[in-house]
Length: 338
Figure 1 (cartoon, one colour):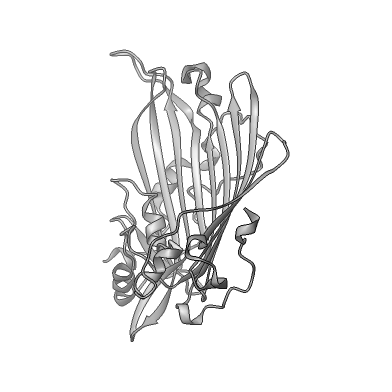
Figure 2: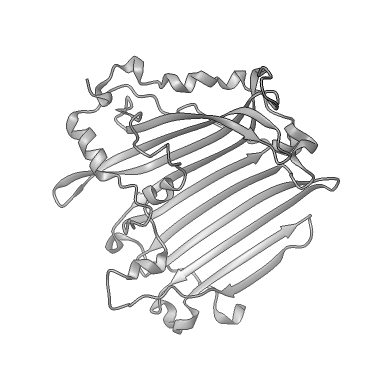
């Protein structure tokens, strides 16, 4: 029986239960942080399998080439959380230059019919400095990309970035500056998309994967939710030793998990599929005490310790051809603002 038609009881990825979150311990974080990771737990429950036609359609529709562009992407939202707590667990064993870090990033990207593309990017970061407390940074980046027809601006002014940065509770520093134009031939309809720097979500997604863990891999599980959403999910564990910067070795486990939601659409009479939501998660667990020396028995911990994780969610992904997009009517920072 095909994997996409497997029994419902097998659709819950037994691999994910191998490291129950309730059995995981974490070192004490030095940060002011309320974020709770979702981890290796799926947000969507698969209730029904796919037909052979649906399965074949999804496999044929999703490319993993990160250089392929999807010209019909209209907007999307990205939330990314990164936590590195190695120094909190290993302490001086991580060397004096090691430090804990916490990063939260939110991006909203929107594309308009009159060749305007706007990216609002807000990043909060906290860094533990040895003997120096916590350094907090918040930055906002607003990228405006537009072609030479918008507001009749000269060619050299067709891309701007606005940055707002605050460090250590100092006064905000704002910089508005032009950035290099993406070269393109306005007479060539195949090149006009370069100015938006758009890539499809399989392009974004492909950068999360490793050589031994691929999107739509052999262990991927396919199905549909009770309300008919198409779901793909897969978990993967990689066991290898982790070595601190001071050279001590530990038994460790890298866990990976992704879950994607797709919808079907018609393209020239054919049914195809694209992502409307996607989440990727990775965590690094320490499984043992230091295992230096030859012939010394390995002492495994009662509970794995989570020392690093990152979680990225792509949501509100919308697709529209250029002809059906709205025109942008707001202001682009003029040259006099610089």
